Amino acid sequence: MRETLEKIRESALQQIQSVGEILGLEQIRIRYLGKKGELTAVLRGMGALPAEERPKIGELANRVRADIEEAIAARQRREQAAALEKRLKEERLDVTMPGTPVPAGHLHPLTRVQRQLEDIFIGMGFSIEEGPEVELDYYNFQALNIPENHPARDTQDTFYITDNILLRSQTSAVQARAMERSKPPIRIISPGRVYRSDALDATHSPLFHQLEGLVVDRGITMGDLKGTLEIFAGKMFGEGTRIRFRPHHFPFTEPSAEVDISCYVCGGKGCSLCKGEGWIEILGAGMVHPFVLSNCGIDPEVYSGFAFGMGIERIAMKVYSIDDIRLFYENDGRFLEQF
Ligand code: PHE
Image 1 (cartoon, protein in one colour):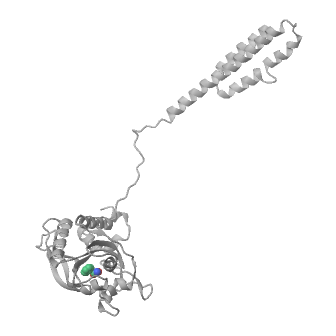
Image 2 (tube, protein in one colour; image 1 turned 90 degrees about the vertical axis):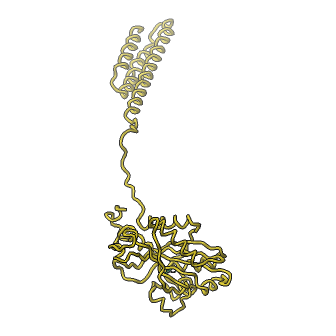
């Protein structure tokens, strides 16, 4: 019996070492230690042994069982360590490998120009004020000295939601809101979308963008307006850019002007960009009309102010030499990629 046990141990240990895969270990365990296993069979036969032999054989059998179990466990640990090692090797991250490119877009040219404008005016101490695009007739027109039936409404026909509610036709609506909301000194710009019921063509769009400026304080003069716009023109279009005021009419400013800049391509000699004029029209401006000040609760005897408004598309078209406003809204990658 002793030899049988020794043989069982020897062949089991040998198999445990040589088995090819970890699954085979379980079969070996069953074969030797299972209910119908070889070792179990030997133990069953122990009843036939003389009584003094039994403890010794029992002890040996237990040792054989323990040895086989330990050999199986050791082999399992080795297999697991090897599998882990293999996985770590396979899954090692090579940080030097080229990554998957993530396509990155960039800002729309209108956004770029708007931010550039904002930066310039913020640098001069202006803050940004926002107003609603769905606006009351009162702020878009009446408070700005454009009563019902005023002919100025014709040039700014817009989309009406009710008789009193419309899509704002100009960021000037924010002027009235800003003056109502806060006391002078006021120094704000207000960029945003505006709407007009114009048919879409190369130079018109029913939706476009403006940037409004408003300064109200004691003793503000037209000189302040000129100085502010001169600095703006230099920063936006290049040092040395000159500005020119042409008399104009806006109901909410008095006096009013259309403001041109000297052409930044030809310097004023005349070229294709300025259409031979030497000057490029970029904005409307003027001194805030006393009626507008008092409509908004500001005493025109104490305070005065200036305002200006520019079309962001118009400026972007000039800066980037874009000849069709529709290109801004079509989202054609071939166009947008150029900026
Ligand atoms: N709101 C005017 C327009 O849309 C521009 C403007 C703004 C003129 C402020 C004067 C002062 O044409």
